[in-house]
Length: 328
Ligand SMILES: NC(=O)C1=CN([C@@H]2O[C@H](COP(=O)(O)OP(=O)(O)OC[C@H]3O[C@@H](n4cnc5c(N)ncnc54)[C@H](OP(=O)(O)O)[C@@H]3O)[C@@H](O)[C@H]2O)C=CC1
Ligand SMILES: N[C@@H](CC=O)C(=O)O
Image (tube, rainbow, N blue to C red; front, side, top):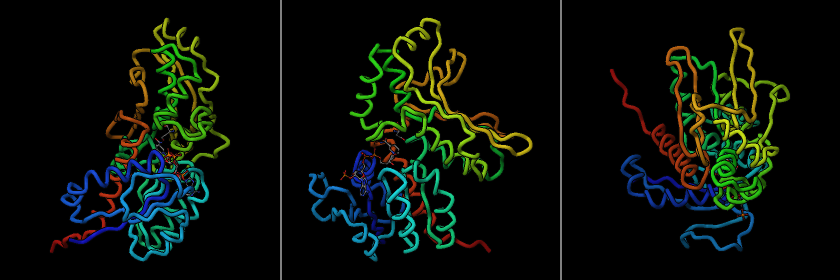
């Protein structure tokens, strides 16, 4: 049976999720792809930390160990920040290695360049996990664009913010307590500033914008507000009035082709589809010319939902590698 050798860059919440799913679902992946998948190496910052990986897996702090291994076919990238992620992935593409990333901060800015580079080098790029955790929003929009036109996307795109707002309302905990809980569960980033300031949802919105509209608005023109000023009393007060705070990101294109976006907390009543979205769940409404409104709901962060989105990308990429029978 043919095999695929993969490396994981980053072994935190997401990288470990990918490793576990690939190992737990080894047989199923074989059956579905026709390939045996092996995680050959893992890149981390600190090689002395004890990791639950098989002894055959190389755990290294040198990207060269991965990029110079001619047998690596695919890299899963799950580190933080733009750099060195962008440089590592550019180098991987240059070497003909397929890439799968969860790093929205990097991909919002450098995704278009990586995709162009990958097309030129004839390699595949998976970025489902950059946006809305386990919800297959990227593949859904890609599929819709084949015969339709997207004109608006609205979503709860940050799991940590939704988790905090829900915990303040349901449990009466403070903002800080709720954030601490989200960090312990692996939903929040190691530095949660982007989560609570709205930047994380903004990066995801820009990934969606590039995909749905083939461009992004000027970043400075998008108003970005977080939930860091909202206190438990505000949430409870709203709840008494049968309203709920939701952190919503929105991008739309007008009839002249002008894009506009905004990110921030809003108060919604029970009529709104986002009213009932609680905890770490995300929800996205995609509006198109022919389909109308499509709403997707699911876990927006965490080890297994995000890992599953990356493994779905892996399966998709492997299927692209298979020769397609030519019909005469
Ligand atoms: N957590 C989630 O639910 C989601 C996260 N994401 C994105 O996925 C990425 C990873 O997130 P997450 O797993 O939560 O992050 P973590 O902070 O849990 O883990 C980060 C991992 O990356 C390694 N790392 C960081 N910088 C470097 C570097 N320069 N070189 C080598 N290794 C490095 C760390 O190594 P070490 O262990 O040695 O410190 C660690 O293993 C981020 O871009 C995040 O935005 C996307 C969707 C959901
Ligand atoms: N910190 C992010 C993780 C997923 O992208 C979030 O809370 O949504």
